[in-house]
Length: 128
Image (cartoon, rainbow, N blue to C red; front, side, top):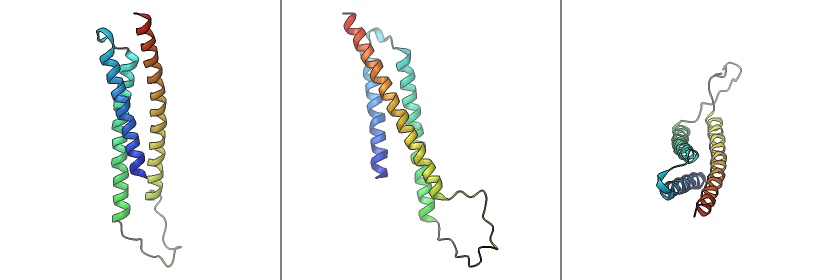
């Protein structure tokens, strides 16, 4: 399931990059709208962030699968919990939240891109 989410997110990023590239190529005289350049920059930044998140998820999964089971402590009172320790499942939850937030941001960027694309198309039709 996680693989499907990541591949879908990668597909969305690729689609946005293709649309932005097509708009840049189709713009007469290569006069690129600055908002398109900003969107393109944001897409590349988001792609890098998604790659970083994927890497972090793999690291956490490796740590979880490689770590031996914790020793059974028969006397929990004598053992103080480490206040700095973050359980792997909490870290994975945080990464999942970040991925969802990035997907929401991508959806908003797609909507903005579609609006810009429609505006450019309308301007191109009016300019004929």
